[in-house]
Image 1 (cartoon, one colour):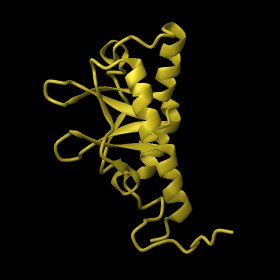
Image 2: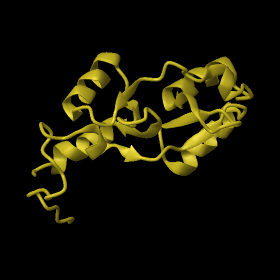
Image 3: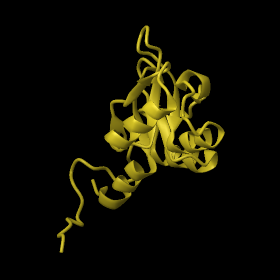
Image 4: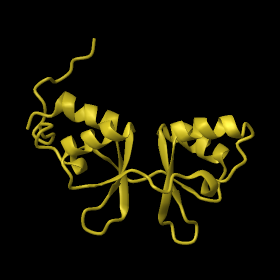
Length: 145
């Protein structure tokens, strides 16, 4: 049986005090927009993630995202998975600032019926990570500071 520390940690804030930056997964798993859906599926599988950032190969800037749900939808349209990510990337990805409150992020995820948000740095606006419902669950489970 696993022994879990139920008293929390001095580094994990309570949900009502947490910011997106406290819970998010820092860094992005990226695929260039000229990659195929199959490439994205392989990346998701090997990296154990449910969303990849789609980047412009010329400068590495994030131009959109592909979620696991988007991948399933695309599979039904193209069983060969030969379409490029540039064709189907969600270019209006749901994003949130790293300094936004975690409760506001949870409300946004709930209202948009999404399980992932792209996180943008509060200072420069660059994509710096992802917030998932599992990340929120971690704060709910262990946040005590």
